[in-house]
Image 1 (cartoon, rainbow, N blue to C red):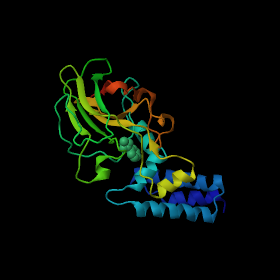
Image 2: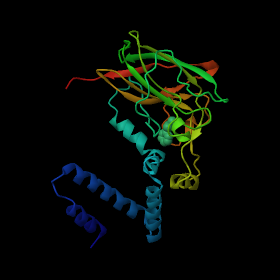
Image 3: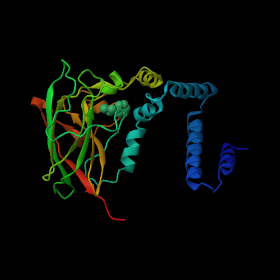
Image 4: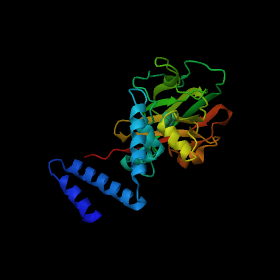
Length: 271
Ligand code: BEZ
Ligand code: FE
């Protein structure tokens, strides 16, 4: 039997039409896995090393730490999913990764308010402001901006303590589409790298850093929401973000305590 005949035999074993989507997904996984094994002339030792690595990824994961998502992030797969599932046109703000540090139920804050609940010595104050617009340039009143970011010590609040909250807020734009809030300048920070993904990065001569950024989910009734960031133009990691999330259109100046950025949402088509 040839490897091609063997592949056909395996694919037909999974060809049940009961769940066509599952069948198609498994078929793609099997075909691509076989192609990897053949293309690389994979040895037994290498296959067992891969299984050992994935076992460690599973063992490192729990309710708080999700090493498989980190693996997806650092292989660029999370960013690819954002790209292919985003329905905004080129005129809309570009999306980027959501990441693991969003917290549901963040308090709503009044426009212009500070998201700094705990001041750190290394904080550099920053005002962030701009407008939320549609792709025709019209302001969107009542749009929501869910904002979160790293502290100036390089840690998210939830990494420091499970019940402390800092540098998070939800804002609603006024009728003119404007938003504004006070925060601290974000810093470059490493993704968690004390597990098997960290070992993979080191073995590939890759650093674990993300360039300084602020996370946003911007949404409004009748519009396609966007999950995105703004990146500090000063960062030295813009060209080598460990999760491949940087887009030129999202890089902004954060000099002199001010950062201005408009967000553009696509109108949802009916139907
Ligand atoms: C973040 O930007 O918060 C993030 C994204 C992907 C992996 C780890 C952190
Ligand atoms: Fe982040």
